[in-house]
Image 1 (cartoon, protein in one colour):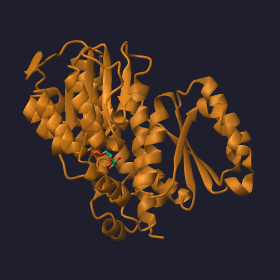
Image 2: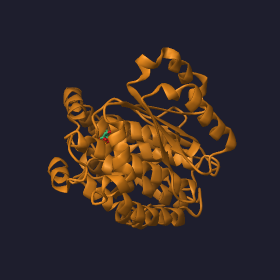
Image 3: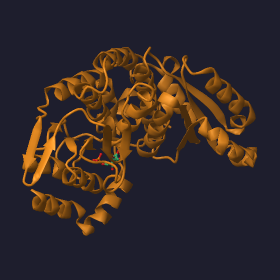
Length: 376
Ligand code: PA5
């Protein structure tokens, strides 16, 4: 195992500078907020036969895949008891039937080449939805230039998942600009401040004994992490599962309270020998409701005690947004340290690239480009 305090070794394995970029997340958040505020969104867009009117939406749909779309889930969880319009997260080819002209559809693809997301873009345009795109380039950028759809162009050349600040924080700005929520910008700025102090506490220079993320990573070595969240930390648990998959290159799964008490808990009857391979990683909040706290404590005693470890990440900050992003930030860092201590480059995702290459022969992106051309 590589020592997490051997900075030279860490930098050698982390060829693409993921750790260093995480240290710059607070600035990235501020930059993303400014970019989203400066984006020109017209009152009306006419392109070919299609007319789009940008007004107060009845629904926010966020369309994308993988690291590009997780921000939609987190937004929906964090604002669950605050928004008076639904947030619909759309993964897969196209959009659900009820997404129509009254919907604001934010299409997010970091590369701009994800075929499922391009089909969603086409559908949003065809149905006359209020479309906005977020991308660093690719087909999506090209299609926006061709159609005049507002495009938030974010810095490219990184992995999608490390670019989370650019893919998530603009959504908060859009909610405010379309008068669906208030005070989000302020909360986002406080989140950036919180992450500035967390970056110092979790960064590579901080030795293992004083570094929560390094300690957790070492605890997780050799186990399959099962990550549990609840309410505003629900999708953060899923995010961490995907980060253990993509950064650490290990299997990992997630679930949430109270849902897991109604099915998964029974799986924990399987017996200790069977369950030892798992570690349980619980996302906790000082503000968790008493019924959730009771469920977590009971589940730890009755079921998770058969895991090889029970670990916890306590969210920081005062708003649900700060709590969600702080837990995500710690978890992301844990997944990177876990990769590095195993000598694995956290950046590369060979299997995703190979799968996408295998799909390319169906030429979905090219077909979407042609179909958009026929629409306008
Ligand atoms: O993290 C990743 O690289 C993936 O989950 C991608 O986000 C996913 O494949 C979609 O690609 P993109 O984000 O470029 O649209």
